[in-house]
Length: 389
Image (cartoon, rainbow, N blue to C red; front, side):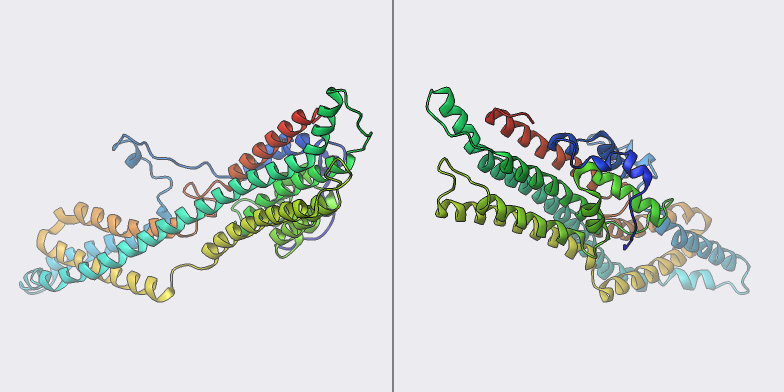
């Protein structure tokens, strides 16, 4: 979604103009920012691990909207055939249709194979999406830990030497603090841009302005208004963040004086730069995996073939059931229809789990987890270095 213009006054009231005034952790854990993240998700439904009764009573989260039309159509179909059997002239129609069972039953075999593969692939895609998000969380922990240790070590060693009575130079470590602050803030912005890319540009009950406004609140005082505007309005905000992280990683390794003599040994600089870039590459790779899942559903020919013969089988099966058992078959047929159609509905729900559904991944929650992890690492690093967070 592309949007231009300045931030709204409500954004400034939420603290967006405090990007350069708040400390790193205060910006990362800003209450209004975290509240916006919490509101960005739909509450996720979870099943009871040890109850077979509680969950079947809950209709929410079953993707019922996809089931209503075919279920109603099949119900009308059943009533139509039973009325036809009762009032059609002649006596042999019901017996003739009842004899078709041996022709209809073989259709269930290929349909079963198609549906098993369909549901399996959907489950794999769901798990791969969660694994990719887990990789982002892990990599954010790794890279902020690496950067914070590298930037905090000179100050820590200097303080240690001072406590031991050694003569130490009176260096300024402001550049270290500034780079760590930038790296942490942009790293927190990365999962936000991933979430914005993966989720649809439309949400029920929100117009475009409201969606943009809420996404700006999720960034909050992490970034300045200019940086936030650039990330939110770019065609690929994820790339904006990745490019910025690489710039800061370069400055950490080759601009900041990381050593007692005013600089790090070139081999150590190269090793640190390689490690930070490996982390950033891992973030890019995990995002690419989710981008692939979002943009590549199962092939049309497979799904269309499955749905065509699934509906064909159900209509024939219902016709045969009404011919064989009459009105008494309605409930059993309805349950069978729901069971088979529900498999396809569940597959659709799990295939691309990035929307606003009770079955989809809580991407806002993961952004919150990453923010807390980064803030804790920053806090530990500053305490070990003997400086204020």
